[in-house]
Picture 1 (cartoon, helix red, strand yellow):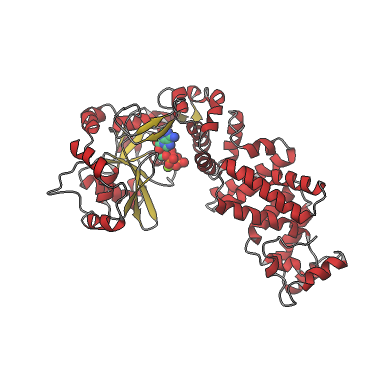
Picture 2 (tube, protein in one colour):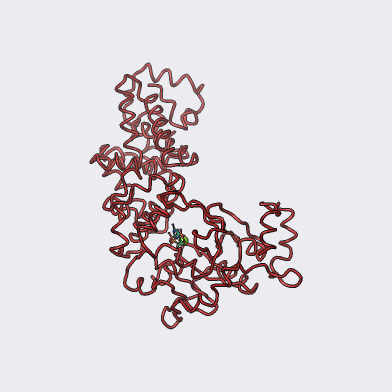
Length: 489
Ligand code: ATP
Ligand code: MG
């Protein structure tokens, strides 16, 4: 304990890579010999004996988890930690998904080793996070997240912080496996699987709940939502994704506690919303959010959009499209998704600027900037997404030009595909005639001469054509229009 305190006070917070290299040189081998492991937190020792006995042990014969389904990184991390004398389990979503016969998307590990100790066991690992300090262990492309058993945030001697409303904003108190289980959100998420013994430890009857198809909050739902309002979103998302029914006590407080989400930092909300939209069950999730009155304020754009019939149709089509892609194993681009979610708000702003007498394209740029500035800040949409959103939007007016050389230029634009998919959604939602989308589909599929024959008569005013022709000095007109913002009308 004294040694630990000493380290806490005098050791530099971030070990420089050079310094850590030497430590890591012997790191693959567990801490043995002279350096006596400082690993056991006193609380862990205190609760250790009691811990296992308070859990239901579910044997392989019952749960039938096939351990070959674990990733090699998960196997190696567990093995490394156990060989070093620590406890280590697969936890959370992965165990739940395996029991539901789903392929886990990642494997999280919980251990009684502190982040520093985990870091010493694995050469290629780094300590991350502030709110929760974790270790990322790297194996080629795979990253395994390892967290130390968490204790109660009510412990006074640990590094934790709770706001007046009960929200936990920092939480680095370590504890026993029992403490760790009680702090997890749902019973189905508090199962600990040890691939060596092939046993699942169940502290909150999660196994029975999974069997019964129920998602149940551990502890008092009101208190748990107050501690972390994001749990309300997780409840909705996980029940939609897993087809588990929200237990009535877990569901009941959500509608009246929804406002607490206003206090959650936007970046965290964004991450959670992204998970929700990219879960493959966005449609069910958004419907459930509306049923639970969670969409108000949480998704300012949905408030606006879902209230206009055309906007709702557009968003629902976009979400369906995303779900179909994810469920068929394809990726979905978050920029595309956010471009769809904010499109009708952008359209409204665009119309307002045009009504004020501005030309279409300058009005479009003003509208894009305005919507991005307000919504992107509220939703913490990262710059890397907003740049692509603007490109997708900015290319839309160019689909209306089906004469001359311009359609050829558009086909070679790097964002053509995303912008075209976006156009099809606009057609399907009734915003544009279907014929426009069909024309572009045919044009893209046609061969050289056929394409030329498809071009419409050039009805653009002479003056405009002359002006735009002068600029590229004859050679190749396409590149200068690449970003879709040089239309001069
Ligand atoms: P997914 O399949 O979407 O990854 P998950 O349950 O694995 O779902 P993660 O965000 O990966 O979600 O979290 C891993 C585990 O950490 C959860 O299963 C749960 O035990 C715990 N956890 C995550 N978020 C919270 C939270 N807000 N409150 C309590 N426990 C949480
Ligand atoms: Mg997970």
